[in-house]
Length: 269
Ligand code: DGL
Image (cartoon, rainbow, N blue to C red; front, top):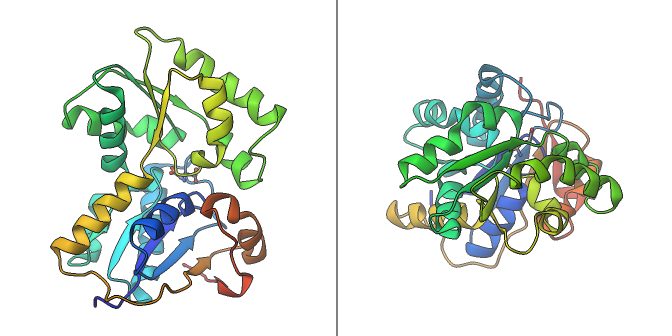
């Protein structure tokens, strides 16, 4: 089992920002990434539909013999308890708790602003996770256009900037003023430069990628599932639509080129 890959999934390419941190933290591990590109976005769909999609994605990864599943999607983390039940004893890790931890550490007692998909905001997962870990005032804003914008590769320029102002200006004007802005969607780190500029220098930006990688590293160690030392292997990618586009645009999220030969089209239904 130690030799098996880690499975990672998202609705599209956003989860690649988490995989980037996982690869950096765990260079000896192999990864299989699944992007449900045919059904993106998850963020505007009901919790029941997202749960069904997440179960199908995780099941496809288990068929590839993975040793652990990372839900690299905040919206799909609504399915964490269901996936834990369905996949037991296979460990499953979500991004909400690690994200809440990162935000609390950065905010130092000040209010936290959370931007996320409509589904994540409505479900209140971050409000609950922050409360459970010690608590802070939380202001939330759904930013649905950030997902297509980043998947389109439109991560800079006047359009991205105008949309960021539209979402962030009212959120960051709330009183008392937040000191930390949590990117509660794995797509948003692709827009980090624009978001940071619009938010201003006194707001710390955090996301769940590094804290999730840390949680996965801890779990592998605790469960004795660490990979044996070896030369790093190329990740495998599974997508439900448009593999060429995934290979082309995915680099924005992963931070390194994706070889189109490593992207396979799969059907989850
Ligand atoms: N990347 C996903 C997240 O972290 C959401 C994108 C979508 O709406 O599908 O919430």
